[in-house]
Image (cartoon, rainbow, N blue to C red; front, side, top):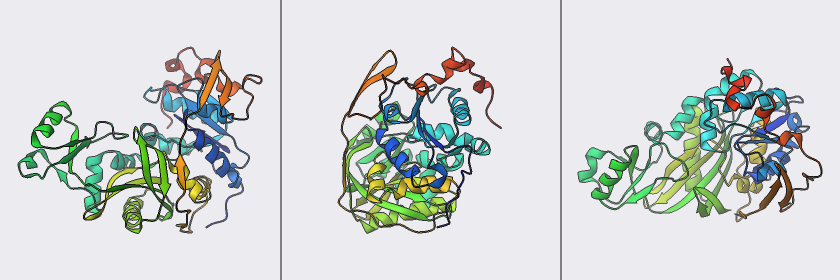
Length: 377
């Protein structure tokens, strides 16, 4: 690896996690990674969310209320926050946030704000399942066969139906026969159909370096999934799964992809097939980060600050398990007064100015905020 830079090559040493209200663990892991990267060592972790008080905001160094992600003011407000508060890195964790930020990645980069997401066309390749299927066939990646509506008469049932653009397995279902497919397509014409692959499912957390190498790879199995997110998961060795995921990462890297990547693989009767690709950290990537001694999150910050990861790091703790649990936040008059388990921050005794709605300080309505007058050029 190249020696890390001593100064931030971006506009400031702070990190912002947008749509970050529930991601307590990510806040803690990002803070640990920042301590290992000179450019971010003196920085703080901020959370932005459409709600004024959030669990992750209670564990962050500061929290901002911003418009919802679909609001036209969303990205301009994030930009102004970053410029005002020395944020050099924005780390989106969910698909809709990556979709919102990817088109502005270059413009924000010119402001010295590094957004951890791919270029818009690569984001589209990952999010649009038709485009990814064509990309996979071009690069000879193992994927389930896609079945067109005109092929139903000769199709082998059951088939698996899922939205061409969907998140968290919402709308996906098993179709046992042609009649069920036709009923579903009538209600959801945006669905695609694939051969149903029955087998063990794995999730692979990776970091693809700017040098086009998958320098971190961790295979884990999702033991309990709620709404598309792993609530229980454990690490293991599965060489054929790792090979399929790395082939996918190398193909994307050849098109210019670099950054965190999550690849989902099913091992069926004919071997592994890639069923989904997420151009971001996986929801349970905390397990992979812990299993690598923090290497996964460190790589993100290190390369964002100008470093280059050259060492391939495939060593990780096998048999490590993650189990998520519920916590509670109590707040009064817009201020948290108790957090269980405790965050170690005395919120009520020392009100935090960062937690106030950002856009209220300048305008009553987010749409009237000065930052909404045009996208950065």
